Image 1 (cartoon, rainbow, N blue to C red):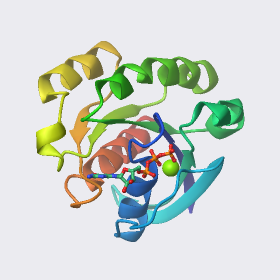
Image 2: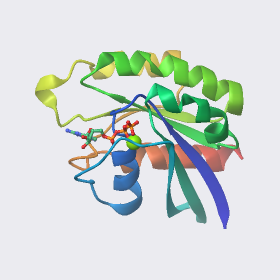
Image 3: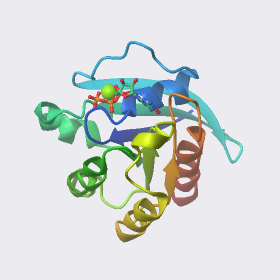
Length: 168
Ligand SMILES: Nc1nc2c(ncn2[C@@H]2O[C@H](COP(=O)(O)OP(=O)(O)OP(=O)(O)O)[C@@H](O)[C@H]2O)c(=O)[nH]1
Ligand SMILES: [Mg+2]
């Protein structure tokens, strides 16, 4: 079975590990801790008639883990870039992630994900602003999710995998 490595990039606390749990295991972890170093999640997904073994690589977003970025990124077939719709700084911080991502893996497909859309009253990044950012930075698309309420979680992963299968 073909193995596809996908990396989850983004600042601490945006919900990368929660999205990985939700996508691969169908649950929202209740007592989650910040990720120390790198964690892996796997799931077999059928795309265009082919079974793929998808391995999600999840790197703790705290700056002290950034030294692991080269190992984390090497060989990635695609990237999921996550920000928190209640903290606009987490969107623009993705510039740093994109720069190192493109430096190590080149022009492989990537998607932008705005997570925590269930927190409607705290939201301070609207869809239009995120869509503009996605276009300007060359993402395949922009997706909104709630790992907590299981809204929209599969779509960015499936769109990314379809693009990977199409281009490779
Ligand atoms: N309301 C809400 N909270 C969420 C959602 N996704 C994650 N969280 C919460 O946000 C916090 C951080 O989630 P994590 O999944 O640990 O975030 P992370 O990006 O993996 O963080 P690092 O490991 O530090 O990089 C936790 O308290 C989660 O329960 C969501 O969709 N909605
Ligand atoms: Mg984490």
